[in-house]
Image 1: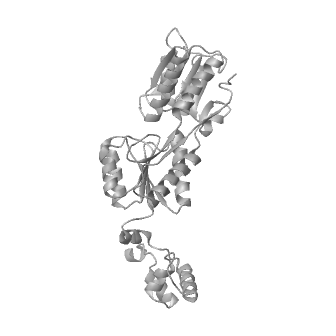
Image 2: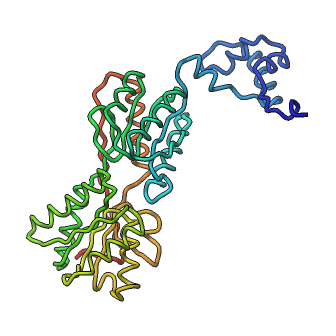
Image 3: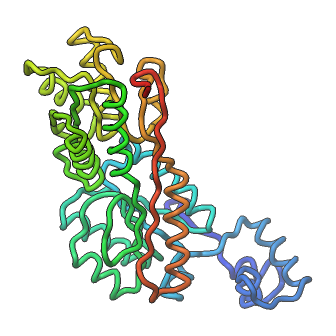
Length: 337
């Protein structure tokens, strides 16, 4: 009984027998560009449909020493903007005929190297990294195996990368607050220490100081809703309470806004203006109406896939670079004047 229920995929040999052709004719039929007579192709396709046959891509990958798998390495891919970027990447990769495989990993060297080993072991065609700080050995191993790397959200000298205009957006946020007459500015970063978060925090501070403003800074324990609450509690505990806060991402902004309104009884934007970063769908909810800088996940995914295509076409080319500049989406939490 157990043998009867065991998984048995339809084989090319079964298709060949039903179609009355050779095994090699079946293989040629499903090999792009291979020569096969129209009548033979029709018989093979009819038999394959009747049996429910699909090509064994894993076996082909082993024979060719490569596969259509593309690894997507991310920490907490279910949260915030990263969830939407992960979904957009999956769609973009599927459209190009790739098979995305998500590795939900941590940010330590050991975890990242374990993820890489898994992908190389399965002969993944490339790896796209959304998070973590890969060690030098990560890039060295990829190079030795000829596996392209595309990094999103940071610059790495040995990899193609997609960056967001964090500095431009953050400087614009500082200028917009001051232009609207706000004088007690604050910025909320995160102890997570990701390059994007750090760049936004640093650029806002530099721009505000250059314009003659004093800025309070707080670091959320993590780049999430609870982190925003913790940062708000810290910022508003002192005598100099901010009248404008730039948050390094929308999740932080949501926590901060809820704390301001429910715990402090202050109004947004009358008492405190808030700008976020990412423009996740929740930013448009009526309860938030968050003014924020929009990162378009579809655009970033498309740029990453373009870099991958270029690398596969020209393996020895210099690392590619794509920069996406976010635009300010104005809602009720702050309206520039």
